[in-house]
Structure formats: C-alpha cells, structure tokens
Length: 85
Image 1 (spheres, helix red, strand yellow):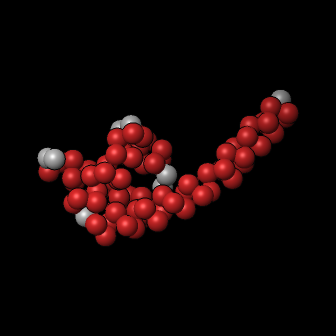
Image 2 (cartoon, rainbow, N blue to C red):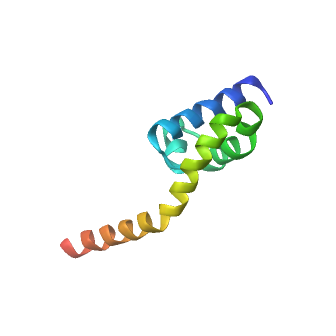
C-alpha cells in the first residue's frame, strides 16, 4: 500500500467518527466511490491504525442497524411529496 492510500483511509475514518457519517455520505464528501470507502475502512484501515478501525466499526454498525428506519422515512417522505402535488 502506498502512503497516500493509508492517509486516505485514516482521513475517511476520522471523518466518519467525527460526523457519524454513512459510507455513502463519506464517499460523496471525498468524491470517491462507496466501494472505495468500504474497502479503505474495512480492509486497509486495520493495518495502519487499529484504534481508528475499532471506533469506525462501531459507527458503521450503528448506521447498519438504523438503515431500515432511514429507508422507511425516505419512502414516507417521497410519497408525502407526491400527494402534495
């Protein structure tokens, strides 16, 4: 791994920890793909910074547990907008 990839993984982890962001939000913020963020966080980060990895995994697990709620709210909002028209 190059030094820049390790730095990117650490920057992604810090951003996710500070903001509680999802993988999708982090990808949009940094202008990279979701798969790149996921690979950096799950595969590259444990090799360069174990403590950041553990903190990030806690947030990602929380986001994963809440995603069905977010999806339901988004669907509800979508149909409310359709009915207002």
